[in-house]
Image (cartoon, rainbow, N blue to C red; front, side):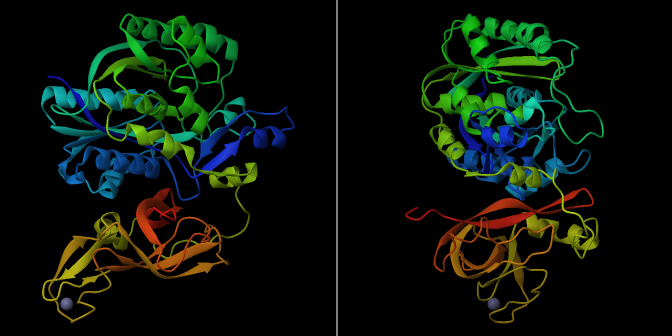
Length: 465
Ligand SMILES: [Zn+2]
């Protein structure tokens, strides 16, 4: 059975850390380029959500039409816990949706892609979401810091229709240490010996896999590029010009488990064979994608990566949790393992409201409004609130206790289905105005006792959008 590609999406974090900032912090020579860094309310899960949402829209599918979700990330939000279930709920997938969380190294992105393809081929799923994401935390002062980025890509796979087909795959495994993070370690280590890595670990494995794929008429390559040079070296070995993944690395840096697929997505916009090669954890895998007509969503990928706001080195460190203020922070009033969260989980992830059976008014949040706010009716049915609306009114809060970050805009929103919500707004409030249209996107509200607390926030649409 062939595995077809129905749509694609990509996402990048809000912040860009210029290499010159890192170089200045450590008293080194000038640096080139920049890397993507998560804002304090972003992480690998919110990036995955954004790419998956874009891919679903590109394929013209509702989240409930997905049979299985395969998520590849080297650092899921829980070392052990409901990472996959949180993402599925945030996306609005059916509670029957299957799939797997692939993790453990930057090879996890290729694991997710091939597992998703195999589910289609085996007939255990008709429509599959493959999403790859990473937001690694490089140890400060390492060479990896100027290269380590963040990003996400997503593909919708099916057994028929679509615009491209997955083809030949090649994989190699050797028990060698490349970039790794030990159990209990929070920051990614750098390579111990860059030359040894290059000559005896990276190049033999990657060039062997790439050479096997180069016997086909490959039009575009996505190649791993851990140091800004090795991608071009492998491209030269297989007789290709600059790999198409170069533009993606230039936009967000090395996005770990997302890098291989994210580097390939822009190439899915033109007919021809695209070779996708990913490596990590002693494993290297390549797969060919035969693009017949432009894959929906692929053309938007580079635009999605081009946005972002420059951050200082200290802002990036603070955002990654590597620079932490002393003193007391204000904890959430309720423990994240408590009954409130267990009972409110569906309401929060699904952004549910209660629609009055009698008058149609949507009351939110339903747990606080057991009766209709308009007519007092007691018969309310849960509905998923619209994800677009307009700012009714707002405030910008300039004094927020840690761990919150000021300025913090909060808006009352009139959603397109008539529901009224109060939510935090992304950004510093400078682009919020009464009447401004907003989209809702999943972000992280807090991270406490090891538990990330996700919920929707409003993002103002650009003027003229
Ligand atoms: Zn009512």
